[in-house]
Length: 356
Image (cartoon, rainbow, N blue to C red; front, side):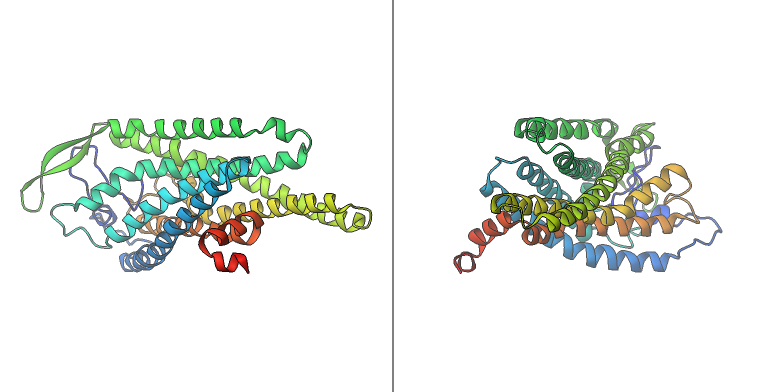
């Protein structure tokens, strides 16, 4: 896996190595970004920004899950947003572990710390969860577009049962896609090149690294690129339809009944909520979509490259901190845009304000 967070397991049977081991190859090439800038970026983006938002995101997504469970699952939007909050919660837990366990310099360590090994082992599963979150966001945006295109038929097309089955199928596909990577890993005693001491380490089979790379693209890169494109197109469509609807309501406001006006206002609020969620997703996922697309198109864009390695590391740092922000701020979108969510939230956590 080409990931700054995870340590790198070599397919030659060597012990897990840290990021700095592959970021400083013994070649006389000046990197486009110096090691000092890379390390400063790591401390700011990972150990400060990511740590703060991951910590807040854990609590905010727990709150989201509690609120949506209290609201019930009579509507498909409640099911999809609950699933999205659970996926974000898992991601934030992993990002918090990463921010508190990794250090800018780890090449002096003779034995890789246990938290770093755990981060590596969980990073593949986290990629699958991130891909799952992307699919959920795409499903939410497509569902809302169908509500606009087929307003009279959408309730029969998208039911609670069907959306639940779809989410379960996508989850199973995402998690099954990472099985090959874990199948290539095993525990073995390896000798340290520094002290010649033997220690227990995780190694991969001969083709493990290639399988892991394929798995990363199947579980995260491809779903993210596909879903990113879907969300962008659906968001543009929703914004256009939202503006058209606003103009139409203004022209027919006098002839519209109170009941019709209430339904349109509710529909407008739901569309705005989806647009905001998709907009946050687009801006926060763009760095990693760019990074992994570049890696696929230009293989030299990796951490082992003496010229581009540090640049890729910084791009990944930006991507991970963006993930932390994306998964943490949705609660503000829900509180601002959803009246039902806001009422349930204040009833559960601020009963005094709710009564007022």
